[in-house]
Image (cartoon, rainbow, N blue to C red):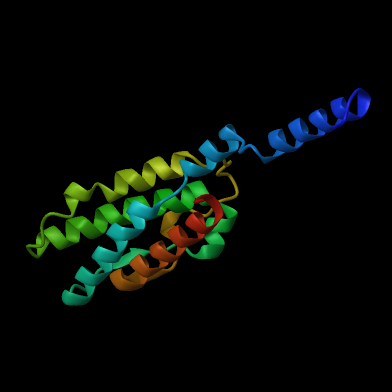
Length: 151
């Protein structure tokens, strides 16, 4: 059994190791608020619905590169275009997707990224794609967010 200084040094070393292993709550909480598992699920449902519809809706579609450069404005663009998509669907009789409030969830997610928007492209300057490609790009972007922030 250790006594004296070696014992004290061993106890302190164990304490330091335990503190280093303890998860950092602030960092974990900051990452968790950007986790988007529920949103990805709903986007998947929308993709299924789009393949059933013959709606020729064209939407401004951000890319992964846009997200990497400007995460907040990219997510805001996705949110605005989801609103357009839901309205287009309602004009052909598809209802119920407004209640998902997907655009609001995307806006909230966008607000969790700190960025200056001076260097970011406006949504209207992005490439226009059909609804299926738009939703698949949205899902890909959300998957990258989950890879970075979900534990």
